[in-house]
Image (cartoon, rainbow, N blue to C red):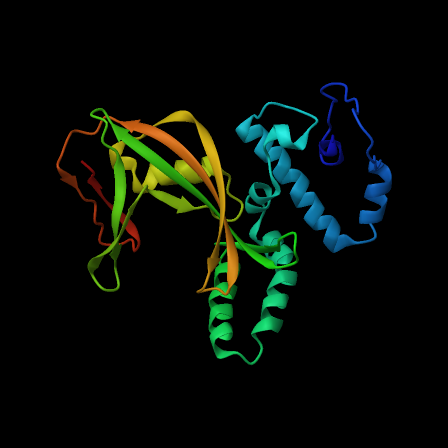
Amino acid sequence: LANWALWTHWKSQGLAESVGHGELMLVVAEGFAAVLKRHRSVAAIVQDYAKTLVKVIKDEMPLLSDLSSSMMIDSDRLICAMPQETRLKLSLPALRAVQAQAAGNSKRLKALRELEKEVHEGKCYLTSNGHGSVLRVVNLITLRLERWDGKFCVEVGKWSLKEGVVQQTRAQLPGSKMRAGELAMQALRRLTGEDLSVLNPQVDGGAAVEVSEAASDSYGVTTRYVKTNFTATTSAPAAKETCFIPTEAEGFEVFQDIE
């Protein structure tokens, strides 16, 4: 309740009354700041957290509320939007736990190397779930891009610059992993302004957030996928099949109509 007051110049949005027994912990901002001054590395992380929270509120303009659940700004999205250096610091304890578990196991060591690469490249970050197990968190955006005739755009392959061929994939909506320091709307603008610019997408507005978890055998941990789904329309002319295969960028999507 009202934890935003620790990170921003917050004005109370209403009056809260308890309807049952509970516990209330009061954190005095001045005392909190005094403790942080004695722990500079932690203070730097907290400072980045506060800056990111303000950036998210300004960018997404949610309905303001003293209740965290009503604001719909969860920690996964905040950490994703934090600078890569800070995300790496937050991931290190969990990464060390995975390193300890992988000791002497060749299969786990291989998975560990892949996981370390992803973390250091900013493609994911690590945390723990409520049971103390390591959790790999990946933030994504997807775009359902519809044409005037009701057909929508899907990814059916990727262009491999190394092999010089189109690698077929399962049909899925075009999307992108969110980069370190990036908000969902920034990732969307990158997707529509680069990969899909030729289709001139007109984003409809709102977005729906979907969270799921699944075991990732290639990394040896459970992955939480935080997916922000957008919708848009395009006035691109009708065509049975449309492919965009550049000669420079690896991983470019190939799209085709689904009947």
